[in-house]
Image (tube, rainbow, N blue to C red; front, side, top):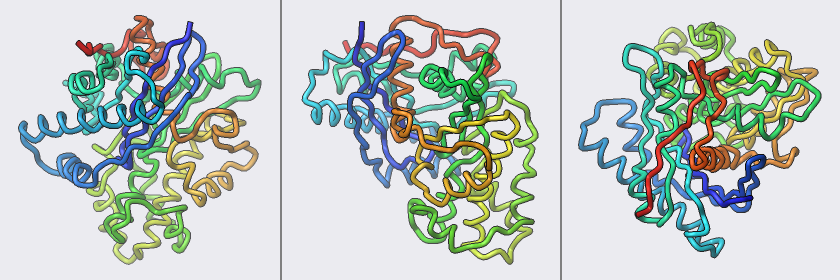
Length: 363
């Protein structure tokens, strides 16, 4: 029996809220409709200040509420667009906006804001949220979640298949008898931050600015020397590591590199950090999704660095590359509402699989 679910995703880049209406069954998740909802620039700027500087409990609370309103507005816009009744939707799966991800240490946690109570109250639909906490409580990384969804969609191929999501961070799923998945490192985040600082653009459209520059090999090697790339999976990362402060420390010893050459090197950094992992696991076919698919130069460089690997977008295999992550959270909401455990332990390193997320009732 199929049910309707809505998935909400706002990634590290905060370039918009992806909303996906999905028909979900025990063995499938089909995209019915989607919407790209604008992320307010003022709110984005305030969140980046919180991440990169100091903040107060009042600011955290207010941002949590404002994000809840934003996610509710995005959901209601899709409901209005499709002219469906809110009570026809079983639940909303809301990832929330990640501010900090620190799954290892004495007191591990992952913080996503976007008050699910507000979303439920403003939409009249039950909300599944706080999806990472249980996995972390079970000793896992709490990320990435995408691999188990990727396996459900693409596991039938006879080749060794990798599914790569390039968002703010990049994560790779290797589909096989044992599911493997982890964050390879930065996806778009450093390129976006650098072009914003240097040219006041939100992103480098089609990689055009990077294409104007030349890769600085000494800088690239230092970027790739970060300890994160020596860690074995399971592993996950985010803005708490790869940010402007991190980049600034590296650039201090490379002051003669021009701004466009830095951008070209950052794109090469993303490509090579992905490519070395794809090669390590013997991936023969790589399916790519996420915002990075839109960067033509990035995709071209990735294919060049993966000679012998079939590189294509998930769109060519019948699954939206743009809304894959939002679909994931609709699917996870289905899992939670049916109290099904999500088989993530081989990906995250958790000691057992768990039922993920809390349910915030509409009334």
